[in-house]
Amino acid sequence: MDLMSHSSSFLLPCIPPSSEDKKTYALILLNQPLPKFTPLLWNHAKLCLCADGGANRVFDEMPLLLPQQDPLLVRNRYKPDVIKGDMDSIRTEVKDFYANLGSQIVDESQDQDTTDLHKCVSFIQDANPNVDKSDLCILVAGALGGRFDHEIGNINVLCKFSDIRIVLISDDCLIQLLPRTHRHEINILSSVEGPHCGLIPIATASAKATTSGLQWDLDDTEMKFGGLISTSNIVREETITVQSDSDLLWTISIQKPT
Image (cartoon, rainbow, N blue to C red; front, side):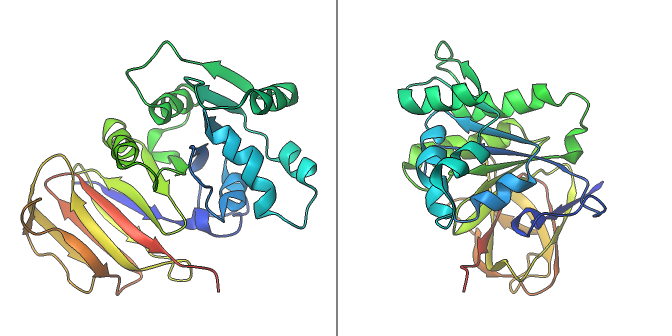
């Protein structure tokens, strides 16, 4: 079974080109309050997309995250490359503002069978045909919080695109899928994440899950809803390993700035 390595280096100040992190990052912003570190995520990204009303959030909240700077200059600098969705949430003045700056507006109101996040992930996939999927990482800000059915819809996108690393991020935590097809090595950045973490079976029960580096490691342990799931666990090592016979969700807390 191949090893898949994971790191949350996107939570650190921008990585210089000589860094070992060779991933291509894309950022999707949804219609929920922006995490405080959104400018940091933006600076990592090669491509930035707003999912419909996510453009309102960038327009309204990005200047608030950079209060020492002129709001107009902030809005001009943090211009989404693409605004995509069914266009039922974006305000007209926001759409016109970014269209005048050159943002690509993609109206997919005819497609009511997929979520705006799904539409944006598909766009990124099509826009990067020469990037190996193992080298692509999609960061999603605003995917957690708000309506529970929206959160579940966002988690479903992780399962739909299980061959792409997609990370759902809020001010409190991040969530990503660990596909059963790989053995996973998670490099913990203890200065910005942890110690609280969890592993949750998704879609099907896990008959055998094994970990190392946690306070309460799993050893060929069965996990399922209605039985045991690994919540409120604690990171104890700089490297966590995970192997399971079913897909798992990995979540870890993000530390508050002091």
